[in-house]
Length: 528
Image 1 (cartoon, one colour):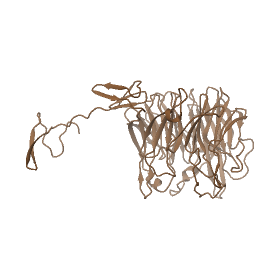
Image 2 (cartoon, rainbow, N blue to C red):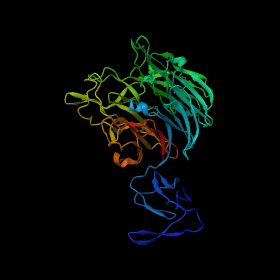
Image 3 (cartoon, rainbow, N blue to C red):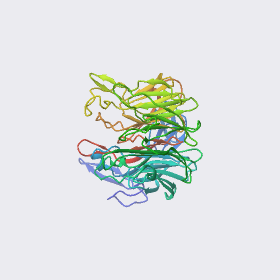
Image 4 (tube, helix red, strand yellow):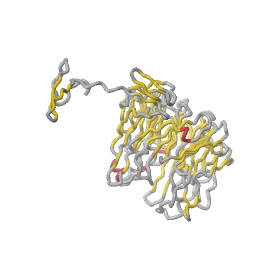
């Protein structure tokens, strides 16, 4: 403790007292001090600035430059540093980790001014953090299950939280106290389910939930409520609906008009163009309802949620009999472009009238001996005149071989970040030792954050965290565009967040060590 005496040491005095000691028969004079000297100040070269003893100063620096701050002189490195500035524990999930459960879902959202970070946790909590200090401003447990999504009102005074719980509640919370302003139980629309037994590691995902939660510039909220479950007779059921909700909780429009036998997950919004695209999937038993682009995208007017078109991609034969779209989709009305990243590894760029313009093989199946291997596209964005997407680790298409068969060799384009033109021509790519998952574009529209998550086929434990890339500027290869890496002890969940000032928030999760133990923890880590 700075300025305090050490345990067992002499009491503090106003003057340091020398003492002697005998070593090998030689008397030595040892000077002792009653106070611990102040630690030397630290200087870190972070993105677009300097971090001196935890205080950030915006300043442009160049690699190799000599920088003097007070009594510190240092040479700027080739790559910026990414310095951890705070971490907050989110609770105990080790039992589920040891049992092989999936990474705990966690959502992160910075307030409009960047001063606060909202966290929605797998354990049903909403936590509000002070970004400058890492301190907890407010904390509340909401539901019987998880808080899947969080989002801020434009004025920062209201925080919205969407649960995956028996009631699938959407709540408007006072951001200072986390008390309810209003609550909308979406299970009244998409059906209720009972809380699963404690030993069911995946049972929580059978509950109805808020899968999409986006706040529009005018304050309205766009919500996707989805529910997929198995009834007591063993039949698989689906029920979903997209809703536009006023800031007072009033539902003003829905699509479909009545909840449908579908799964609607993560909508993508082009607010300037007044459109929204939502992927339409289905896991239910029995015949599919007619009139929906299952396996593709439904395009809607943002005002009124009226259908204006759809995009459907034929299955990739002979390995697939259907198409699947998860989070890898986006749209740009000004450029009349829709991006679809498919589970079969294809990147598709289409027009909003449904015309398929460009198809990129991406991680599409290739033969490794007699076995097809693929790398799905799970995350994709349109950024200006570029398509940005990630491929997953190698997998074997379901039904193409024994499900438990290990891929005989990796797909050549697995775990890779790709950037192409809107014509599909590759501009640059990045492939490293990381298992990449999750794309987040910073508010500057130029910095891209890519998560490094759980490793399934590699025992290395020093490649977790996030990678930051520069999407702007002249043509360069992927390595040259890597700005920095932010390292965590454990893998990170695929939802990241970046503030206006460049603070990066990651949700770190524990992982099994292979000997029955776990490493890391369930926590939020902030980096400058």
